[in-house]
Image 1 (cartoon, protein in one colour):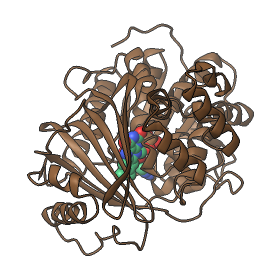
Image 2 (tube, protein in one colour):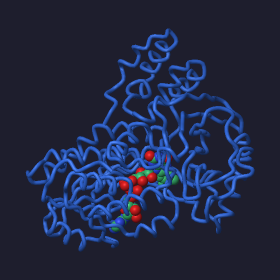
Image 3 (tube, helix red, strand yellow):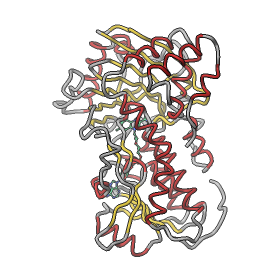
Image 4 (cartoon, helix red, strand yellow):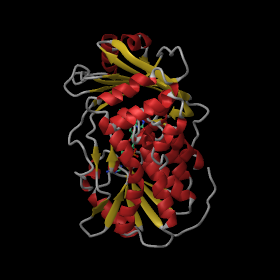
Length: 428
Ligand SMILES: Cc1cc2nc3c(=O)[nH]c(=O)nc-3n(C[C@H](O)[C@H](O)[C@H](O)COP(=O)(O)OP(=O)(O)OC[C@H]3O[C@@H](n4cnc5c(N)ncnc54)[C@H](O)[C@@H]3O)c2cc1C
């Protein structure tokens, strides 16, 4: 745990104990703030509950946790050295490449992480309230705290923040997710990697090596186009049936991945998850009936489909931006102008994540297919694509524009690394 750096009498309330809410709560405690955290589950209920994500975190996000002294699983979670990407058509590999990440990634079951962090928060003098917060709770918190933040993710309460139609490309879910946490997945024949299999017209399949309650595991994740053949979990009635259906689909559409999964068994009965996420951007400030304002955070404001594995990373990065902005505010009021500016500071980064993720939901444009194809023979381009998972702004402009894509490929072909000069500011 990092030592306190300053003391303040300011009080802050956070609703929602996920990656963003608890990380920010702990960061604020380290800076001497009086913090109330409202969670709708106790630490034990979180640990005993259902898996929530596949939560791969890339280098920059892990550095943020490390900076706060919260990276307790660095030595026990599998080290994800890189990414492998396959495009599969008619159950055959059409494109395939892999590349190592400059800094490894890791995935720690959020049940394990959040339970530990919540206990640390309580042990460190934070006030943990167990409640399903509604408007009444928000009013009461706003009347007694200098700032109220809502980090309730996909919770109903997030709807108090108005949908930003100009920044939201979709108004309905574009994928149906089905995740299983398993032991016994056969290893790859290469370095430890997060696997991404893109199946045009069907959806995606991801493999994320992770740490769960029973030790190292793999999160296997089918992300189906709604109504298509992979959207096949609606009639499933048990975790065992969920895993059996997953294996059946893999055998049919990705036979080489099906073979790896033959001996897979669930990590625990709560190691399965299904869900559909409508990608949505919301306006950052909500006005309560009393006229007081509250500020949203992370998934509450920027909810992406999980296909690029960015939500936990966004949560860590937005909590980091908010922590800095709160501390920099000193004794000045947390008024609505400050709230809006704080979110916009994060949005400068997050807009790249939204653009990239939303762009992968419809069929890929030709120049993206050309980039993936070229990455098979150009290792530096493969690295550039893989590194984007850590810093999505680095994709601008070459991922989005056919001419820029051509120039990027040509630069990699000629070994001219200055192609990277065209990339945008990378860090949040
Ligand atoms: C299938 C799937 C796979 C994913 N894989 C990845 C991945 O590999 N990498 C990645 O970076 N991201 C991934 N994500 C996304 C990532 O899990 C989320 O974006 C991230 O957890 C968001 O963090 P958060 O703190 O904003 O919200 P959450 O983690 O959702 O936390 C919000 C908390 O608030 C609580 N809450 C809700 N309402 C209330 C209320 N009224 N009162 C009190 N508490 C409340 C909730 O119970 C929850 O505990 C995935 C998501 C899914 C669904």
